[in-house]
Image 1 (spheres, rainbow, N blue to C red):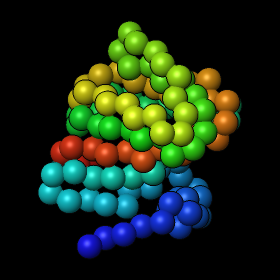
Image 2: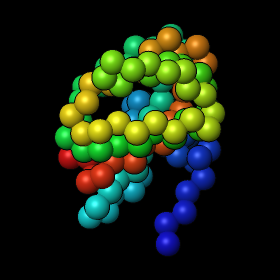
Image 3: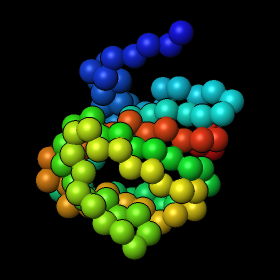
Length: 105
């Protein structure tokens, strides 16, 4: 079993000065913590993997393809592989669990 605490993951991510911390990598999936602070620009480009975002805290909008929606704590968003997507209008520091399948390369 692998078990994690969000506070510990956030501290590790911040200590490594990165917006993304991958903390699980298995044959069929990977999981990470993605962080954007209020006002940040999301530099993402499309990924070769399907992904699911689960917003743990914060507020923003996300555009996936031609669709835009607001997200906040508890929001879950699926992004198909190859689809253009981006968080924007980050009004509160955003912390998002990200699941990639297959694992992010």
